[in-house]
Length: 202
Image 1 (cartoon, one colour):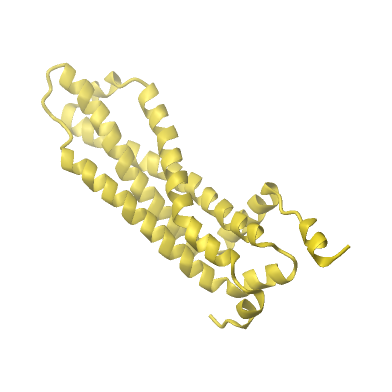
Image 2 (cartoon, rainbow, N blue to C red):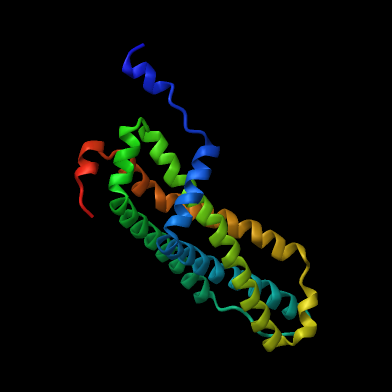
């Protein structure tokens, strides 16, 4: 069996990637926390505006006149774009910091797709955590704002299905945003030459 066939037999399952990705997130928590907070803040802004709009929409139906301004949605889009750029920059720095680690992995037989999968799985883990954190931050902010603006009695007008649906949207947006932001750094990491990576000094 030649070397090419042998390399094709090397496997790196999603379970392995998830386990290694989780360990990497724990070991590099300071760096990972930057991505986590970037995602959380973007999702918090989105979810708070979404919920405030829902609260105020229900309030308007009973005679209230408070509403979310249109420009705030523009700010929300800008915040999500800034979030994506921040994630990309942070992961690029992480790639540079992990040159030798990536080089060692590839020297031990890891393929390009294995490295790519590892970075995408790490991104997915952070997206789930950041999206969940951002949702609850937005939920608290929107609830406090609407309670102060309309009174606590009006909060019960919002159906439970609204925040549940928003949670799903928050996770979907955070995963999509994080994946898109990670593709270029992950591809760059996957294409590293192992010999050059091992020579690199951080």
